[in-house]
Amino acid sequence: MVALLFAAACLALIELAWAVHRIRFRALARKDRRRRIAEWTDMARSRGFEVEAREDDVVIRGTVASRPFVLDSMNFFAYGMDTENALRFHVEDEDAIFSITGWDVGYPHGLQQPPVGDEAFDARHKVRANTPGLRWIARLGPDERKLLVDFPELDVLQGGGEVRIRLPYRIDLAHLDAACRLVESFWCRQDAEEIEK
Image (cartoon, rainbow, N blue to C red):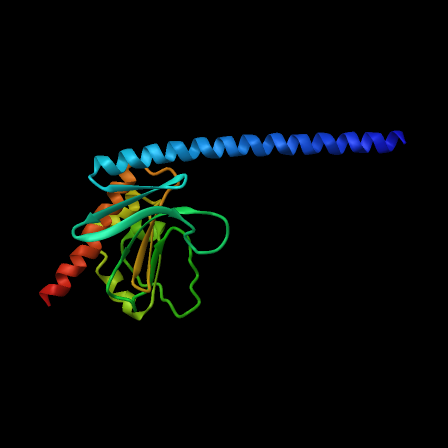
C-alpha cells in the first residue's frame, strides 16, 4: 500500500514537472516569435521590402534587380520538424538542378561535383549539379564565390524553377544583404547574359 502511494506521488510529480515544462516552453516560444517578428519587420522596412504578418510569424517580400523574392521560415526540405529560413524566388530554367552547400547533399541521381578551382571556396563548399546546372556553376564568378566564403551559413539550392538560399536561424542585415547581393550578382547577371546572346 505504501509502495502504491509512493508510486502515485512520483507520477503526480512527473506530471507536474511536464506541465511546468510545457508552460515554460510555450512562453519562451511566444517570446521568441515576438522577437523574430520585430527583428524581421525592422530589417524589411530598412531595405524598403514589404512585411506580411502571419499568425505568430512574418514574411518578407521584396524585389532584387526586378526579381521578386519571398523570405520566410519554412520547412526547407519538406519533411521533418526543423524549419529554416530561406529566401526563395523563381527562375525560368526548370531543368537546372544544383546545390552549393557546406554539407554534402548527396544527390544520388547523377549529379556531378564540378571543379570550381577556388581554393577557399572549394574548402568550404560542396557543389553538385546535373548537366543543365553545370552551366550555372560554370558562371559562378569570383564575387559570388567570395560572398559565399564570407557568409558560410548561406546554402543555395536550385531545382524545378525555384531557388532557395538558406539563411541562419538568427538573420541579421548583413546576411539579408548578402543573400540579396547573391541574387543580384548571380541570377540577375545570368539574365542579362542570356539577353545579350
